[in-house]
Length: 179
Image 1 (cartoon, rainbow, N blue to C red):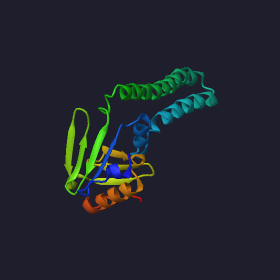
Image 2: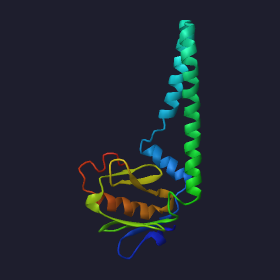
Image 3: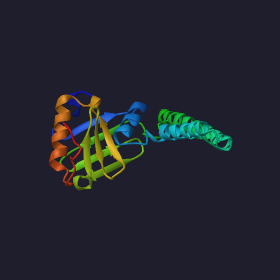
């Protein structure tokens, strides 16, 4: 979207985009998703097997070997399966409902998708975080709306940043905000 497309006569910032798999993965990572849980479980399984082998206890090897193998295989299958599931659901439009339209105005935020629309007044926004590639807008502690910066021109990104700084009133709302 060009900067002129997002600029509105009423001072609102408008942006429309269709989220991609890369967006979902990147935003999940930015929000502190469980990216390390599965590798950690895999390492724990291998460590249990190595410990059993080092101690030389045949009983421990028989007990830890299958358990370690199950933990490692489960980690790999779950990791691959979750990505395949997300990719399939994304291609079907189930997760995103198609293109999303965001309007940021003096009143708040309006998000529209194919089958739903949400309006949030500024007091409902708990926190805002700006990363290298996204604006993350939290209405709860765990869930965020996101706007990819690639969809905003420099002027619209600056206008959106100014709107967020002006209207989000939560005491630590920009604790993680970086310009």
